[in-house]
Image (cartoon, rainbow, N blue to C red; front, side):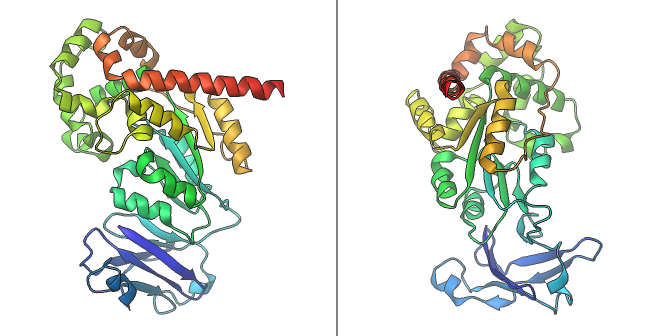
Length: 351
């Protein structure tokens, strides 16, 4: 999906929208609090989109004006949404509520910090959490938006694919790293709990990408290292890849690339391009650095949450060779990143 808002002149909002099917006439929904939602089809012919090969007919432009919302010029809280995906195309900037910044927060956690994400979303006009669940083309479109004054993108987009775009479009970039064994422990605990939930919950997007792994976790005893070892020995390589060194995969490899040790160096070079890099074990330091960079205390009240038992299971996983092999690249990356962060903090404290 690609979209762009060319102008919000108060009395009208104009732009274009192309869905994943470039031949269909897109629809758009107008949402205003306490009013009935209005949905309409693209109402402006855009020959430029057809000539560029972006849309087969060019019927992909939209104009929202008094015919849709009689008092449009006076409405502050209005959103334009693609109804099928629920993706926000545009929302008006409110200077009393939103900061005029663009932030990309890369957190490679399999299951995101919902409370933290919601707190950060409230500071921006447009927010796109867990962005990795969107098609690659849609992520590219989000990061390429030019007329958006306040936007927050979070999750684990592939840096090799999207990093340069984010930097070119003026995003402040922040990366929050985590001990690989802790991240794996949280995944296993979460997925084990998911196995006891109804099928409709297991089919949710949060769990869906780990679905091939679930059958192998049916009988694992996470309190028994031998049970974990026996379980992972049964998992085929194509399924293991789902949880193999996710940080290195995000920062140091293309989406379809098979991870190797050389990707650790690529990931370190990528992290050097970020404005702020921190680790969960020093979360307060990360928050302070990001707030300083943003110029406003958006992280001041943010706290991390953690599933019970993560630390204990992480310690157990650290003694299991097959798990260490699976996380080999991330173990190296995390160790080197921590060294670099601590060295930077020592230098800062001496100045």
